[in-house]
Length: 89
Image (spheres, rainbow, N blue to C red):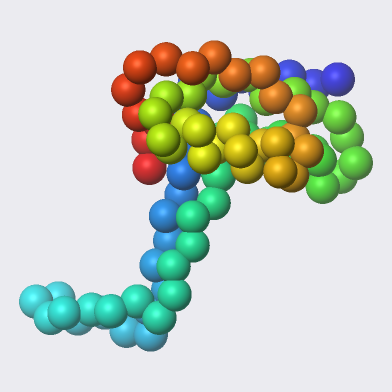
């Protein structure tokens, strides 16, 4: 079992754009929200290789709740502690 300690977990918010012009209104053609942070990315890659790992992290607020839901949905073994505040985006 490999443990990843994730002190700065995050939700990665990505906008897909055909073009970008400074000073203009730029509209994305799509958007996505994915779980991230270096340790979480390591655990995701280990899982894709068939290796067992466990995410150890601190989460907060609605962003932390979403991260925890995603861990459980994709069956990423985890142990989280919830605190006040918000997990970063």
